[in-house]
Amino acid sequence: MDLALAPETLARWQFGITTVYHFLFVPLTISLAALTAGLQTAWVRTENEKYLRATKFWGK
Image (cartoon, rainbow, N blue to C red; front, top):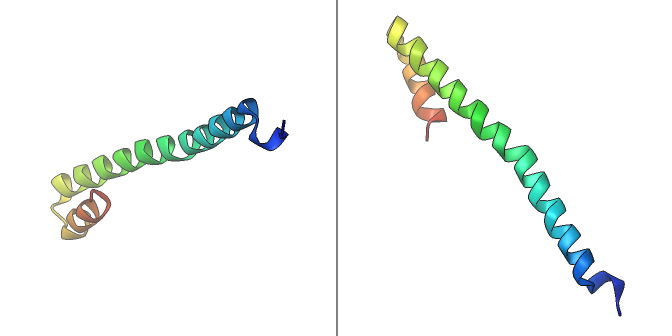
């Protein structure tokens, strides 16, 4: 049997790709939510339009 197409090898590749995706994108989305909340809070407190523009940019 070809080792490159063995089910165990394919399962390991799938797990590795899923793990890398999870490792990169989960912290990114959590930090992006915190950034957006901080920018929104700064806009409410100061009413400075640059915070509103940044909130709309990063919140899309």
